[in-house]
Length: 159
Picture (cartoon, rainbow, N blue to C red):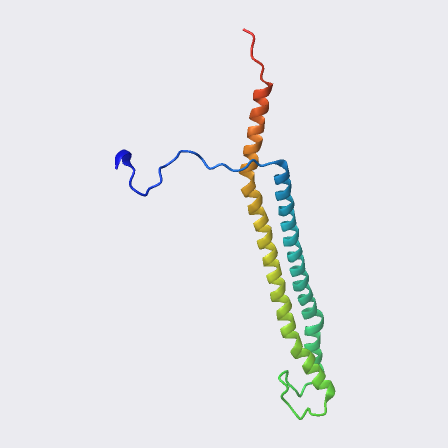
């Protein structure tokens, strides 16, 4: 083939891909979307911190005192329910039921809280990436606008 082109190949062009101009309306729309992403990320993180804080509160101020009260009042029984016959002891059965419900609730709250915090961080990082990806376009727009205004303001020198 002549000219170094092979059959079926697309000839090379030296034109750079063009992107549509970044108008102030597009910038404003993107900035609103980024702010919305940051708000959603912050909301997820706040809910996560509330869940983890609530779990810690329940653990320290309800779960541990319930265990301490159980060991102080029920010296003949274990947490697993072993010991002398407990068939008619409603207080013992109620204490055991309360103590045995706490670990699953606390685990759910802690893991759910950490998951919410991580989702919030992920969404906030996505917003940061979007903002950083927009910076070259904005910088190009500012430089082009400045160059146009400088060229328009320049008056020819009288020689």
